[in-house]
Amino acid sequence: MRYLKQHLVRTLMLIALPAVWTACGGLQQQTVPPQSIPLQDAAKSRGDLLYVSDIFSANVYVLSYPAGRLVQTLTGFSSPNGLCVDRSGDVFITDQAGQIVEYAHGGTSPIKTLGDKQYPIACSVDPTTGNLAVADESKNVSVYPNASGGPTTYSIPFVPVFCAYDDSGDLFADSSGAPGVPIAELQKGGSTFQIVHYNKPNRGEPAGLQWDGYHLAVGTASTYQRQCCGRIYRFTIRGLHGKPAGSMHLLGGLASFFIDGSTAVVATGFKNIALYHYPEGDRPTRVIKERFQSYSLVVSHAPSNR
Image (tube, rainbow, N blue to C red; front, side, top):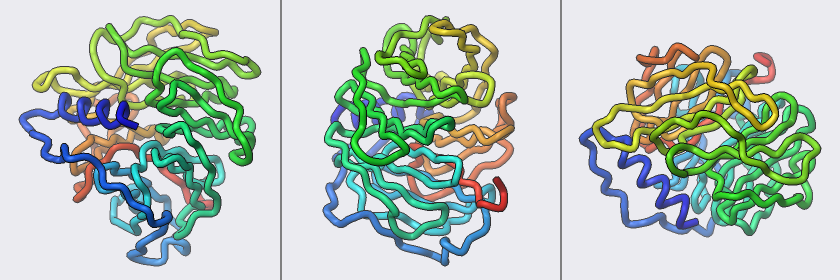
């Protein structure tokens, strides 16, 4: 758990412009089970929703999407980190206390909780099988069949910070490294993670990983305080080789991102969320100002909009 906290605080400090972090006293542990503080009846909401984790307040915030109005607050976590969503709109929240909590779209209470003693960091759902992959701090990725039961655990040659399935069921994970961001792949039906060979960005901390339907999108945050800012690279993947397919520049900070069609929703790590045209980037088309520090986020579409 210490690795992710140190990595996150370091990354957010580095991508800050003149900002100075004061929240360095550590996270407060909570013992109450995950629950919800609703601002309206989100379960009856027919609209799309944006879920945002904040490990400093230990809450997950649910916003209307794309308007960005706070709908409800999910509480009772110790350190909610990565978020992922399946095709039905269910949202999974990894909590480094050792559990993965599943909520239905707009749900006000968990529908399932999975145990994970390996300090879960990030997650992704296989679109071909419904399997849930959970990257953890113990240099493992655990795969839960159909997002339930006991997992199959795969070792990986680094501490994974993000993970992502592609449309074929291949699983990717990345981490901090030098001179760039290392990526490993567990090919569908395979038994081991193998390093993907690609032209790594020369500098940067990992700041998101997702399959956009055509390419593997790899986010990096600047390693220099005044070298603005984040960038999302795209790679065509063939086996264990990646070929550059372009990149988009972000005007502000980047902690993680979620690609929703032609929109990149960016968690800046500060008190706003930025929406960009994807893959054009450059300047945000909309900025949602909030009172929390955004770290990870996903969009869950209402059933009528899928």
